[in-house]
Length: 103
Image 1 (tube, one colour):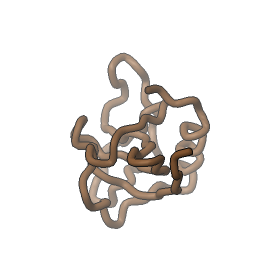
Image 2 (cartoon, one colour; image 1 turned 45 degrees about the vertical axis):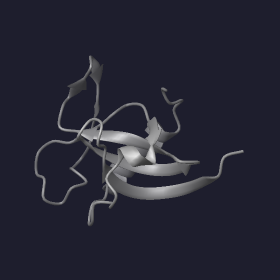
Image 3 (tube, one colour; image 1 turned 30 degrees about the horizontal axis):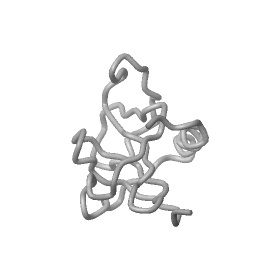
């Protein structure tokens, strides 16, 4: 059984170049939800947030509708500081976390 630890942080996904919300570490992988400015990614509609978790960003922000998993070395070493979801956006994130993730 792989060791699981809860996380609550934002880091840059080095594969996509987008920020990601990381909520769990399983073994050496992070489970995360991608964050973007795009309404649609690869033909899939994203979920609009009340406001960007980045306090410096006033543009519309969206989260991907499914969580993903990648090795921890695919993310920036340091988490972003000062980023957070609003209470309503946290509920949207919880719904995505509870869905079956894609590989």
